[in-house]
Image (tube, rainbow, N blue to C red; front, side):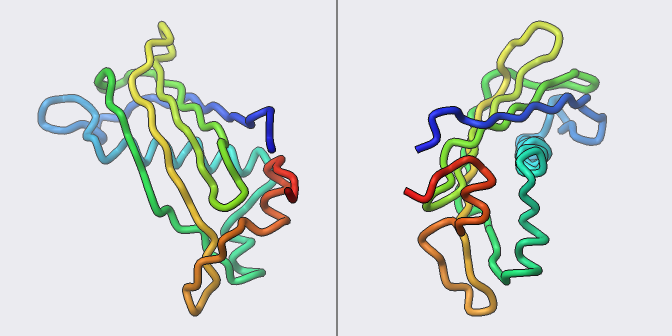
Length: 141
């Protein structure tokens, strides 16, 4: 089991086009923010899921998302998006936290889950491949 969870943070400024008519970030854009941090986390660990797909024909679709909106984000808010890898054995589970860069106020928490799927048959593999799991700091056990 991975006792030291790997985290990655990225700083981001909320652009105008992410706002809804109430002048706060539209709820769907939080998944985009999660993706920025999740991709950064995997790259930080040396994992490129797209290249892995090209070599092994294994996809990693997101099967579940959860978002808890705590405090709204607005235009030009400077935020820190943190992604923390929780599990990489059966599925890739990543927790997220978005906080304001100015005062650390937590605005959003979330989670995504991904599974390994063998293409072209689209069969779920009930284990994250060894190469990916080890790069993310999870043992074979």
